[in-house]
Length: 226
Image 1: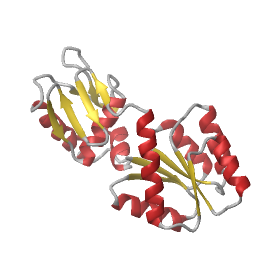
Image 2: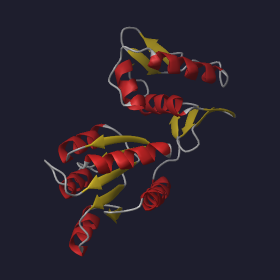
Image 3: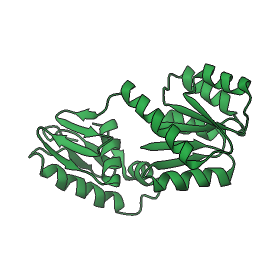
């Protein structure tokens, strides 16, 4: 699961990020509303943790613009404000829940789990490309009646490719999605793509992941040239 934390207090965001990563979540942090909104519009997240009192664009305005753009990602407001007026404004603008500082990490986890359960009922459980099916919640890739369990990084790469099938993807894009790294000089993406290819070979004779020379990779059926 991928979570965006929009929070300008570094101690708070670091506390949340460390705790969530220990629980197995992938976490990105934006320190102001402008950056947060940019990430929300250009990437896909399972949930957004949104502080109200953030610089450049405040949290309520970020939420308002999200919903105006029909971005339905679940939003958990985290705020030092505790008045009913702030809570009502957030709920009216489309937030899914709220949590008032200070809060325990256990309570944060419980709220996140509840929101994810709700959102799973509203969105497809799996990603599909032709006969390939990827389950985001079990991290299993299947073709027909055969399936393989993926590691966290294998899953993230496969997820990114299936969300962008039949489009050439650069190593830099893939590294940023799976590792939050913009360094494309490492061969780490190549290593994990090779792992994925071997697992897919156990499921089918068809080839789905192709190398695009000078660019990176593309997810395509093998009877079509990349």
